[in-house]
Image (tube, rainbow, N blue to C red):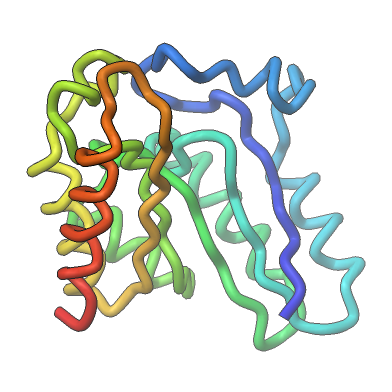
Length: 173
């Protein structure tokens, strides 16, 4: 299935991490509207996976988040939904909402599971919190994704490999 990505640069991110300036990365400074999403998805004659990236989708105000999800439902039958978000913006209530709109994949911008690295990068959570949120997603039978980064301040090869081992151990739970 083809992917149709929508970028929401810096919209609703709860933090300003040391490595991230989505507006500079994407060149986007104007906000995407739900109407823009609906117009785009209606152009596709066949099923697509609609992806919301570049911001913290579940940190958006609930009314705006639901408007984006409703717009995505205008895609052809059989289309899928994928979102990317910050671990702190995952709750059972949010997951219930995502499921009600048919979201099949939730990618968490975890960055690292190393508490020192997370603190240095100003992520606002620790490794345990990230793992708890991943497990919460898995419990709801939503496919989880973990967006990791390498080369971060304070990160070592050993800590990166440890992150991968920990995440691999979650498979199948």
